Length: 372
Image (cartoon, rainbow, N blue to C red; front, side, top):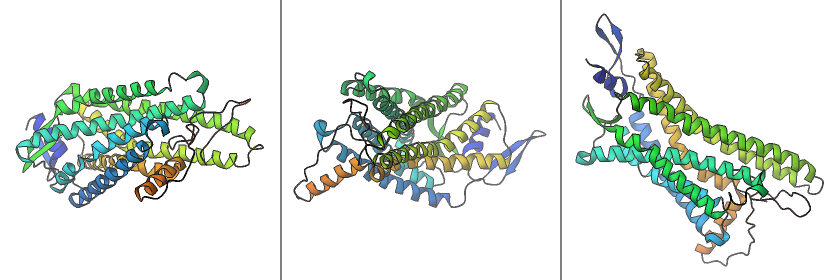
């Protein structure tokens, strides 16, 4: 059996895989396929599809309902992030059906096109999702810590250019999935798999997690760490003047922590298993049956966890962003034909991803402004 055939069995044969070479022979391993995954995974994928579709569509409608006049600068990032997740969830029914067939890709003559296109969309979503979250973190940092020095960087035009750059870079980073992903016959059917024979693709797949996870997480942690220190410093001076400031500060920090935890929890396991698997392939390490089992199942479970991120953000917006909830409530009343309550939305109101102000008042002294 040649190396390419061995890679096929290593990654995608659900009945048997092979242990390491022994005296020129291959040791047959029992199936490493998770019991019941052909039932559980499709259900999870359909749930993510439904909640992700409704949730992100709801976010887009609510955020854009007031138009440019009533919107916040950061809303541009929110809409683009929700749009990326909305496009992504449309691929989930394909993967749900494939999972119900034990990973086999059975879509007739258009199977190869659907394989490449859906894989490309997933990659683009993964990159754009992380990049937009990073951009939002930098925007929060500029709004809170460097407000007076960031007027141009936080202008509407600059943010639109940034979003365009994020989409362009995401589309470029996703090209390897479009090129190196295809159908491959193995066992009883064909699977939508990566080309494991290309060293260039494997090295690129190892570098991408550094660029699209480690670096963004570092930037996010730096931005929010600085924001927290800044808020602590200024809120301590404002408590005497406003008794509610301390409560608002705690709420702000809770929202910041929620976003960071949701982001890391969703993507860290997947990137860890991905790096381990690719490193083993680059080093030509043939794993034992047990190692193959936990690597494969780890990728399977962590991938599903990463997909959950596409439907978590709308929930966080609704639960933790008072400004978003007020807009949703007013939109709901408008749809019911009720008279719209008159509310003044300060363009510097806080946003979920930071829990901090969009801007600071500057009359006499720096004044923190957070959502009620």
